[in-house]
Amino acid sequence: MDTLLKENKMGTMPVNKLLLSLSLPLVISMLMQAMYNVVDSLFVARVSENALTAVSLAFPIQNFMIAVGVGTGVGMNAYLSRSLGEKNKKDVDLAANNGIFLAFLSYIVILVLGLALSGFYYKAQTDIAEIIEGGETYIKICLIGSFGLFLQITMERLLQSTGKAFFSMITQITGAVINIIFDPIFIFGYFGFPAMGVAGAALATVMGQIIAMLLGLFLNIKANKEISISLKCFKPDIHAIKRIYSVGFPSIIMQSVSSVMTFGMNNILLAFSSTATAVFGVYFKLQSFVIMPVLGLNNGMVPIISYNYGAGNKDRIIKTIKLSIVAAVTIMALGLAAFQILPYQILMIFDASENMLEIGIPALKIISIHFILAGFSIIMNAVFQAFGKGFYSLLVSLTRQLIVLLPVAFLLSKTDVLANVWWSFPIAEVVSVSICCFFMTKIYKNIIKKI
Image (cartoon, rainbow, N blue to C red; front, side):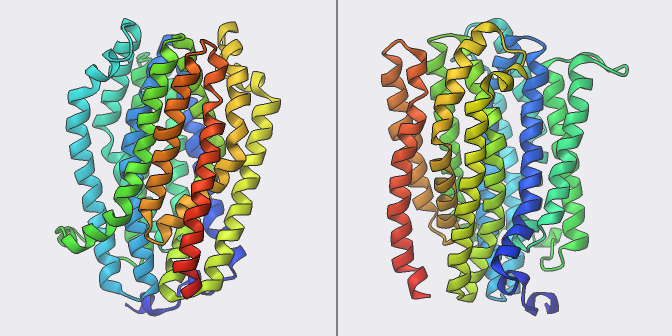
């Protein structure tokens, strides 16, 4: 209780220094996450292009698991951080322990559904036996070991919500390094291990997640004194679960929309060639190097806004939002420059064939046009969540990816020119920014201005 009653640094430290101290470790850890996402594809590409396609097609399922874990974590984070600002120790512990319970429950539900439907999922998209067999093997291993993913995310969100971003960075980097080390060992069979191909990539991934989960649990118990994790506190609390999912459920849906969009895009692109789908999968891995740092910035920003909303500090909220927008747009501008100047060099990391280069170079150049606008939109969606307006984020995401992007991509595919399909991304982002500006104006008038 004494720890909680002391003024948390999120209410006293200068905002620019606070945002940097919370976000920089998360940006670094997110870059590590992006690296090991890319490393998976990098090594698998050396097995075969079909193996790369199999892993690329698994992305919507993996993204859905991450969406459930992160969405629940966002809801828990917002509830916990606001309770800290209000000096409400009981709700702090309710948020933490119910967040862990919901993470484990999510694992059980997704494991059962995933194992039952994975075969149908691949066969609905392709009839190439190598892709189906490799994809099923890859995703089943990821599903069985995904308790590591769900609980790793939860442990990291607990550390972030109390301002201990450095420890969260340590867990993410540890998991990423484990994956990077064991990827080539398991895939190609070094040091006496059998060569397992795509199964080895999946095994290295879940091993990294499980070790990161265990480290995160240890750090929360030993170093996160503002929360109390206890087995006897895991009894579900309906009030706490409702508060977590009031923000978390829209976030889950919002991030799951990306899985639906990716599934739809894969099917549109498969009508052109499996190589087009492989290029799209590679793009998603590559863009994570740009998006992940902005998401790290988001994760540092949300508890600052939530805490100061609970504490009634308007000036710190406004300054945090402005600084976050500037930082996000700068990061995305650097990504834009890289994709425009170095598309050939980037694709050759994946041993790209001539056909893959012919498709991939214009794809990277066209899609990346939307990066700067996307930086603004990503920050706005996190701001909506920090104020408990997860529905706004959901509506933006649904509109961008399902109402605009997919239909536009489908219509452009009817021109029979693959390069035209990529323009659906910049078009959808323009719509997204417009909606974000409308919702942000409402939040300022109805909430921030009245604090």
